[in-house]
Image (cartoon, rainbow, N blue to C red):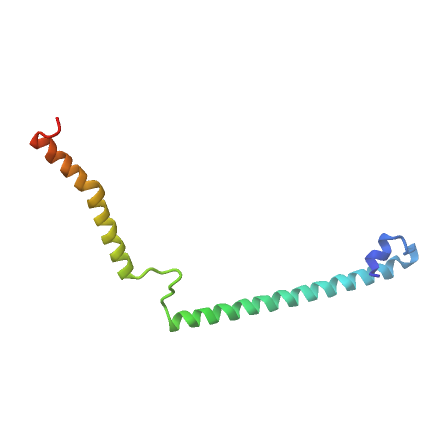
Length: 105
């Protein structure tokens, strides 16, 4: 049972308070040291992953998950342009021609 648990349950008397405080302080410092070591370990692992990722990007700068090739952009713009002509411009031109020819009054 930890010192904090003993104190919570009233198992420490007044004369044992100083030793309890010292024990509690030692436990907190040990926990802090463990936390700091774990944090430093996770930071080092993050730095390692970042350097590996940076190395991979230097070796292969094209990331297919986030980048779109110039060919794909060109093809997509041509498709959109042709669909716009087919569904917007062509019906307008046909309507104007039918109006001019007198078919639609």
